[in-house]
Image (cartoon, rainbow, N blue to C red; front, top):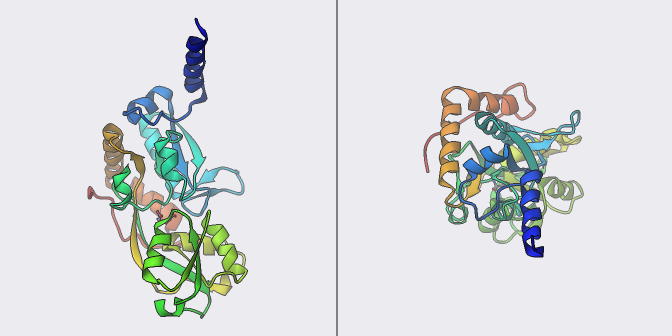
Length: 274
Ligand code: GLU
């Protein structure tokens, strides 16, 4: 074998043995995942209860992870979780480092030009965390500094909703919340379910609140590569089955039910809506 030949052989072997995600230009992730025996998912690791590190097991757990586990079970493959941020999740998918995004990601027409989304598997809306008693309406945030995460819809929505505000974007929401605790921002904004998770984990949660001020609706979709038709069809079918057999509701109850620190109502069902 010449030099180039052995380089290719080494590369091929590396790809086979590392269990890495599918190369970005390969079309059929469903077949590839089955062949390699592992589903590589991009997930959040500091966004309870969607994806965060469980203190006892040191493993990433959460609502998003349970959907990935359910898909992997149906496929009969292992799961590999790779932490992503709001800003890095689409590039990670497109570059082939992950097979699927399950990371509190809103499906919207702008993003759907770049990647494909599953049916919505969670629905929430964008709100704010503030110091108790400081904000009762959107007007109270005029001209204020507001923290959020880079690459999120939260960042875009708040800039539109309060053009006079200064938006400070962090890598993740815990960093934005730290800025609020330090008095560097007047509010943190993102999806209510994420804010509820941050608040529940905060040691000084009594000082903060989520006022009844909502600026958008955010349906979450699982993100897949554009045109990955077989994989999208498989994932959508699985989600609809999970809705029918109660699996999806059970995952919701596990993370948001009345005995959890978050306690939200399930106001949606998974349906085959674009
Ligand atoms: N769901 C919103 C988004 O996809 C905010 C949460 C996040 O940053 O992941 O951008």
